[in-house]
Length: 140
Image (cartoon, rainbow, N blue to C red):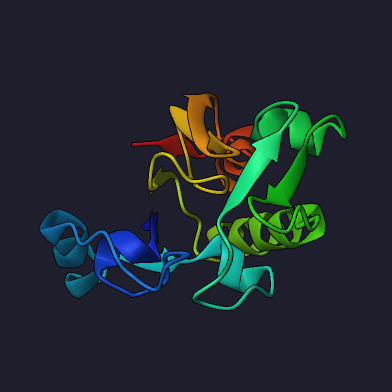
């Protein structure tokens, strides 16, 4: 069983209300092999929502208390929401004995190679990816 970013499955969960449909991900779900999640929604954020970027580091740094998640325009602190959503994603992964995840790169939650840092993309992992990797779940 896999976790997948809901936007990759065609759900309109992106910050802008859009999706990033990947037909291979949709097939995994249709075959009962994957569970779609949106960590931002699991953390209590609406869709659409303000774009969020990580400041002072990536998801690992945020979990270590160094970085923060801030709204790009408002500068509102969304750190608690992203951590809550990551923890809920991990809970789901544990319930379903998930061993791997297909996440949306570039996201402050799901990024696995790069993340949003303000209006820029930087190398690093998102908060949910960081917490899943710490639990031994592979990014695919």
